[in-house]
Amino acid sequence: MRNRFDAIFEQVGRSRTLSAIWRDVYEHDYPEHACPFSFVTVPELRWLASALDIGPGRTFVDLACGQGGPTLFVARETGAAAIGIDSSFVAVEAATASARANGMSRQATFVVADAAATGLGAARVNGVMSVDALQLMPHRKAVIAEVGRTLKPGGRFAFTTWVSRTGTAGPPFPVDYGPLLEVEGLVMDACHEPPNWQSRESAVFARIRESTTVLTAELGETVAAMLIAEAVKMPEAYSLIRRVNILARKAG
Image (cartoon, rainbow, N blue to C red; front, top):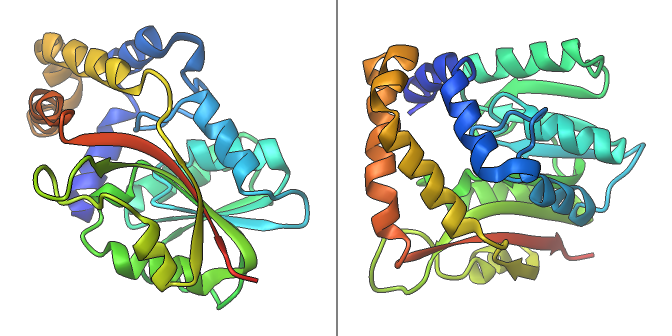
């Protein structure tokens, strides 16, 4: 899995075509300076920053931070210190370089580690966020356990992901994160669907399918094939899944 994402991160950030697709579809809601490899929007990033209830003198973690754009966005919005965790060496190198280029090296650090084994101390941080990543993790229970372990009492966990509409069909996503969170001492306070998420994602996938030749030239056959395969498959799944923004807090 890590090698797969190393290959993606090496290529995707340099694709002018992908940037143009996301920018055209999301318009003013596209987080230009965050450059995410995800479907997160400016309103969602601001929601994450507010939901974490952090500020100067506090610390938050971004699990599966990728190249660090959303991490740095939330750090700027809140003034809190950030620790980005990702299993991809390529992503962490890019995130570290971005923090340096933006004068945020002292505020944001990035570490290569597994989301289920961050290496952080118990009750170490005030907040944890994750952007469009939990649905990719086969060991979600272990990741949520690590969130519960590293959060201070009263700390918050805010994340964006997709869930199943029913428990009988579709991808193996949870229908409800509430029970998974409760086992680790986390109480779910909010779960909502962001507006227009399905129409926007569908439009992005349609543009990717239309741009096969250009993307193959930009990204190489391997990475382009992965993106195009997803663009073909995902629209068929929307009757089975929905995008959600979830907020939970640790008891105490």
